[in-house]
Image 1 (tube, rainbow, N blue to C red):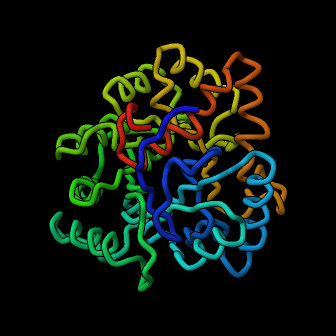
Image 2: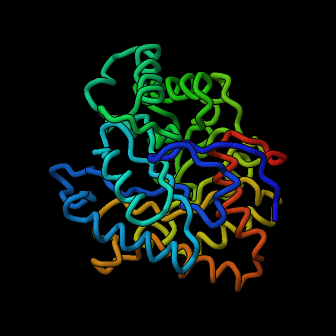
Image 3: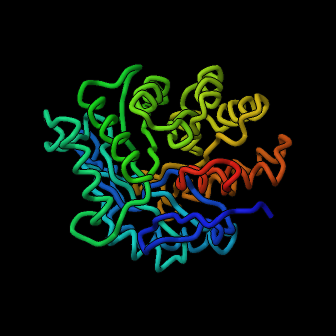
Length: 318
């Protein structure tokens, strides 16, 4: 068993010792959100309508695969529901980490507007210290902080910089949303340029970018590379994801990889015929094993790496 020093992760039901997380984690999911708009009414997971199905999936994954932790990256302007997260965690027996931050520009709430970085930073630090949305439930991560295109827009630049400053002040790490996998290097440049160490950054949706050179660049710089839309075949085939994953493993970057499914609408739930939160465990990891990925590497990618990322820890600590 790999030694884990006493490091705490902030969950929706209080601090959790990283050493007590024995099973795998999902590094980028949504359990309750509302991203609906006129062009897309179905991008919702409502606690009242879909909560029972979500809880049932998490419970079965805990029982079958030992699922121990879900990093829930629904942030400001995304229909975040911290009370629902606490209930889902209690019902399922799976720890849940909640988030603060701002998604990419089309979903920015009015508060972003032309607010300067200092004002935005204070908003994040207030939530980190006092709790989310009028609750005492505190976030354990900043994310999913978004941008789209090769370079963040001007408002996205401000929200990314505010995230870096809040991370430095609070000790939390930052998980990004790189729309369709684009713009990861620019995100990392911005965050590390503000002083945030690369090992406290996870660059999102890199499995949607069929470019192993970019993945190697991010990993070599010390950032986590998130293959976090596993099973979303309409965006990218899992065969391509597996090829990209194996390339990153072959390049020696196993300790930089995070894995998840990014369930972000009710149609993805098992109860509605979707792939569900368990697709990683039921489908993708068996394919990785068949390709020669051993159990220690799987434990590294699904447990130790996400814990290390959340704790802002170095490999020696976790």
